[in-house]
Image (cartoon, rainbow over all chains, first blue to last red):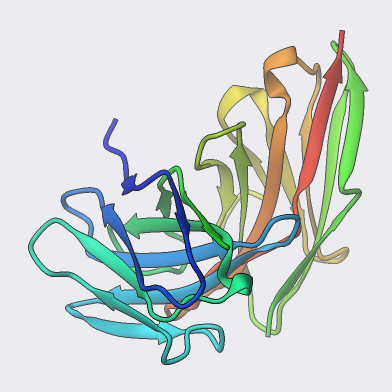
Length: 115
Length: 114
């Protein structure tokens, strides 16, 4: 079964550093997403991406964050000047159609620890 | 705005016993409802979803959930728990129309006791 793959599975970074989390969505999917889960808290929506642009973003997704689809297969989340509170599990996801009612497939997540 | 409340952050059942994980939602528009499961060190896997039509939906691994509009609930059940069901379960809601993102509950950790 096709799957969403994410790298790295775990990254430790120093506060203030930039981090890039990478994702390979399912190949024929058109919608891509990033969610995050701070330890012990809810899974939270960050951003959705369609047709090479952001289609929706949450208030969490401020200027510190950016997303890019640099080629036909990868989808990246860049976090600039990381803060301690950015420590979380970041999930990439993709779907073939729009959000509503359609199955969103999640990757296994990238654990980010900011020290 | 939409929200999800999952009652009980941790539920423990004996092997073979009924599993009941509770989820209540709030939505100003007709909702789509989902249950995801997360096994240790793995990603989120869709168990089942309700969009339209039959209010009792069946998912993988013997789980099912019933959409009750009057109660704004979408509880997850399984008649007989298995050790392999031990995991974190997340209820999520999205709007019926438009590209609105999934809103997740806090999750319920299910433990199965032999």
